[in-house]
Length: 77
Image (cartoon, rainbow, N blue to C red; front, top):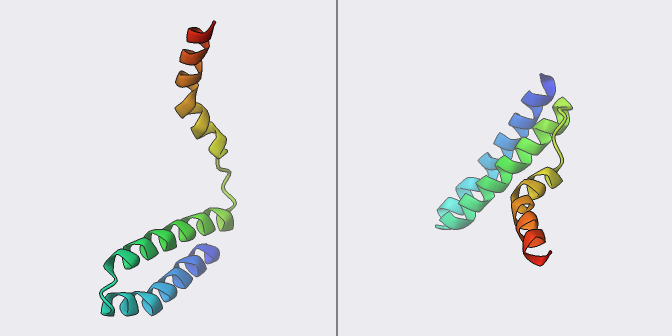
């Protein structure tokens, strides 16, 4: 629980420091990308702090390309 609070506080502090400057300079696209990257980093940090087991990214690739692989195997037999 303490790790979760720490990750959220650090993410909030970084956003509090960087976002006003980006918005003041009218860099809205950069601010959006910054927020997405910050949220992704906070999410991955949260998973690391809590020690949750996550599936391998290779599983997603297998799900996406599995049907294509089967189709190509049938066509090339």
